[in-house]
Image 1 (cartoon, rainbow, N blue to C red):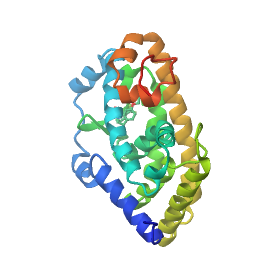
Image 2 (cartoon, rainbow, N blue to C red):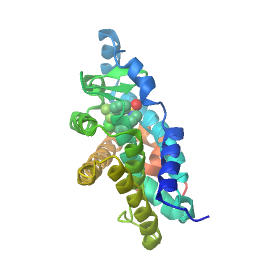
Image 3 (cartoon, protein in one colour):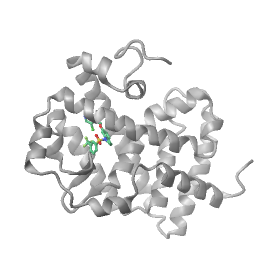
Length: 255
Ligand SMILES: O=S(=O)(c1cccc(C(F)(F)F)c1)N1CCc2ccc(OCc3c(Cl)cncc3Cl)cc21
């Protein structure tokens, strides 16, 4: 049934966001001062690079599963071809995870929710990609500064996903129609909240997200050259499917 109006579209995307976000922001507010002890930080920092990468890849893959669920409930997404749905998730899911992560960021002490507590950047030292972590933390900080509501984040993340400019789309026109509806939803929400000025800031943040994800993929290539066994056999299949480039990295992934 065609969407009766933009209000209904917004309501359905906000509901999907709420149903598929791993934990509610209110729950995390209660935990915001639960920090890792010196010993716990030491334990993370003494993990080997491949242990920590594997740990993060598992957490990331878990977070991505919820984004896949969210995408499937965006009106129009399921009408796209399977290949186009996968192409949008391949390039957009990490970006949505990073936006969602910024909701779990405490700007007072620069910590982010990780493994049940709030962690500073030093916890991720053994990943050996300090520049990526710093960029992830900066992005989270920037997003917090916008003080987006959950409804605004729901529409923003739907727009991050439904992007007709993504590479290798079969039916770009169809994705454009779904994207236009979501754009109408986002502008409707921002107008209703009297925050039209946020729209261009959100488009700027989308450009930062793209560079963050390019950096993540670069690091993944570096990592899988150095630790082929971990990347080939110990990363979750969905992680390989989404973040490893076709064939080159990880032969034998099903398509
Ligand atoms: O591990 S998380 O709970 C996690 C949680 C907070 C901060 C981080 C990190 F690390 F971004 F500060 C990691 N999780 C859930 C959300 C998420 C996004 C990316 C991610 O990993 C990508 C990655 C990076 Cl950014 C560097 N090297 C290897 C990998 Cl796979 C993990 C992740």
